[in-house]
Amino acid sequence: MSKYLFLFGNTPKLSWLELSSLVPSSELVRENVAQTDLDSEEAQQIFAKLGGSVKLIEITTNLNPDAKGALSQIAEFLASKKSSGKITFSLGILGQDLLDISETDIKKYLRDKMSLSSRFIEHKQSGLSASVLLHQEKVIEVILLEVDGQVWLGQTVAVQDIDDWTKRDRRKPYADRKKGMLPPKVARMMVNIAGTEAKTIYDPFCGTGTVLAEALMTGHDLVVGSDLDGDATAGAEKNLAWLKKEYGLSGEVKIFLSDVTQINKYSDLKNNQVDAIVTEPFLGKPRPQIEQLDNIYKGLEKLYLGAFKVFKEVLKNGGKVVIVFPMVQTYKTTYSLENLIDKLEQLGYTTTSEPVLYARENAVVQRQVFVFKLTK
Ligand SMILES: C[S@@+](CC[C@H](N)C(=O)[O-])C[C@H]1O[C@@H](n2cnc3c(N)ncnc32)[C@H](O)[C@@H]1O
Image (cartoon, rainbow, N blue to C red; front, side):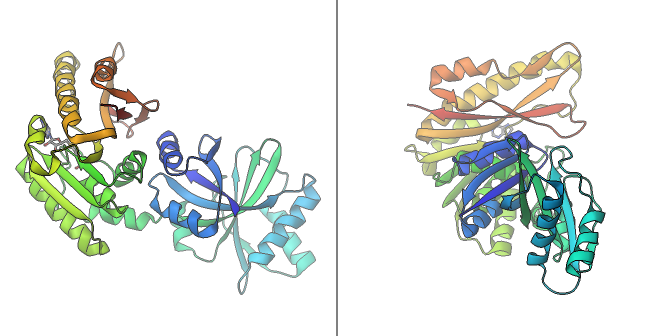
């Protein structure tokens, strides 16, 4: 067992909800870093499953508090990781400036005291970006992190495969950018928040099938989707057939055409079989006029409440709903569906965590991710 750090991407709160759902023993040590003790294979497997973590860091030791001792420790660490030729390294510092040691000091120490030549790769303070690291295999990235007055020394041992995420986002055969699509990483985080024990995942507003795709990628046995738009259901079918072929996946996929209020008529969903509903419903117009917002949010409240009523008929007792609620902030008012929470409680749904805001830059409609548990 070693200590591992998970470095979150640009939605740290959602990333933390995801990681703590998969690994309840993990602890948050900074807003964007969590730590947990794992064996190496397990750490790599969990990391590969996550949508919201960009680096996996293995901690080796605590750093000597005295600068000279720390310098020799870092140099020896680099020398021990060296393969052949020059040592190529980067130095990521998570938190404020921790040490009075520069890359020049490290290079000098390696050269003068250990007769080793090295090259430092320039980057911002927290380390190289995952995409640079992904394409520069030989770089040893040393990471320093201060926790409770001690400095931990470690190395980045895995980075998020950004190319693969981009492939699923951009190369799927059917897209509908007008209606809005969830970024696959957000869909993956939502699926993971629903939990690995969920066998059947259902998205009743499936659109292009992003949630279904990520549920299939993470090994759920049965993924079911529906939508009232026939272009969406046909497109989602195409996307999932492409995904299954591209990744050699075997899970079962069922997609059907239905308004959300009618889903309980679909035979595969009868008898309370669904473990979790993971979904991004209709969020209203992407650029609403301020004077329309009152009406839009009344309509959305009705749509969402009606949906939750019928979800009760297809979800198992204890089933989860991981769902996006829209929110618009004007200079005077915040429009959201938070008023629904009390009504949902009366239906048996309780929130299991605080809502997490997720917003693209400059987006008028922001997304809040809510997690509910149903008690029947
Ligand atoms: C924001 S999109 C979902 C996008 C999806 N997450 C994706 O990544 O492609 C919302 C979807 O809800 C569907 N929809 C809207 N009202 C509906 C209703 N009453 N019943 C079922 N589906 C509905 C729309 O056709 C649309 O595909």
